Image 1 (cartoon, rainbow, N blue to C red):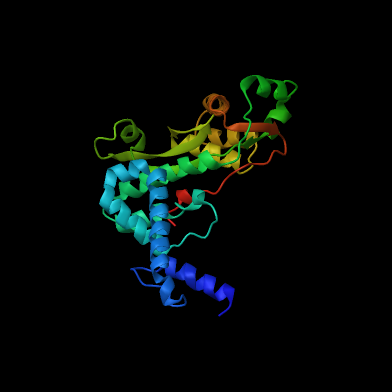
Image 2: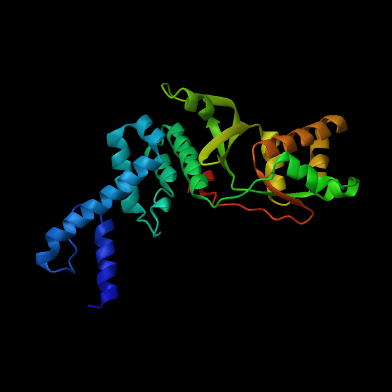
Length: 265
């Protein structure tokens, strides 16, 4: 057997359910393989415990560990880094806790917070720098302005995760009006804020390359001109204050990270 075939069989044995041995290894190595396999699984489960502490507290230790083991058997890690070990775990929780949809929403929020924590560093634009960048803008410049954003993740919420995060003693309540949670890193700390659907759509459009003029016109389609302009200015101020904007320009590109946790799979 070639070394590559042996390595593939060894990895398959690590991910296999139950306590089966790796048949390609000599019998004398079976004890060492079992120890390695248990250490491997324990490391992965402990990584999920560290990444999803709120989810762990909510569902309990035994259900969490059982779901984590099931997840790694069904979806063995494919990355060299433990930073990626929790990828897809929220989708597994969605299937396992099908009658408790809040569980996967909590996990998606925690995974998004983990992702922004390990994302590359960015230097946001502050209000003074923004003023300097736009000091010479005329009407056409404002209309053509595009914004580059840092590492943000949008998590749609049907449960009041903000209220639950502040008071995790009770189950999160279902929202009458869904909102979006925006997750980003503030210095070294992942944080999130909830925004309404109008601001979320405005943010999505600007992140995808829409101009500020296009944003204003979109808002004017559902509100008087003065109200629409005030809303656009308010969003811009909030995005600056939160440190979401990296640069200003007519051809600015967007910086983003993997947004897998927005979807169930």
